[in-house]
Image (cartoon, rainbow, N blue to C red; front, side, top):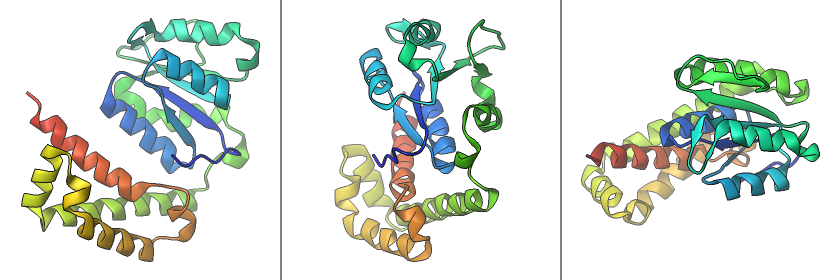
Length: 210
């Protein structure tokens, strides 16, 4: 995980993998540090260690409710500057919560909602945002081509967990091509190429589940 300690941190804790991926991608494209919590212990460890600008919580979590996490955060003085966004299935107003967003509106509303919590110097200029979007799109195209021209190997590697090993040469060739076309400032601060691979593997795995 690449973490720029000078930039704001976001903790994400949701029970839905696809929703977590969407949020991580949106925030990553803005250059923010994202930390994905998988249980309440990891959640509070991240809080202590990183003092995040924003915590994004599912309303219903394993072991604890999102609103209960919010109440704990508010009782601790050193977290007084941490803002909380609650993700809900239905429109609702929750007293005290900084923002509440319906899950099906995350892609449309999240970035505009968080900007009021982030100092202006950390808001990415439009020109830079476009560069990141182009890099992410280019990574996706390269990974799609790797899969298209190596369908048998890609399918086998995804099923048995050997995708990186069985396609090692093709992946390294694709990574070199990606790095030759994308600015070094983006290469050194993001993981778009590997993220594109992981998204493909996750999509195939999800489609294979009953």
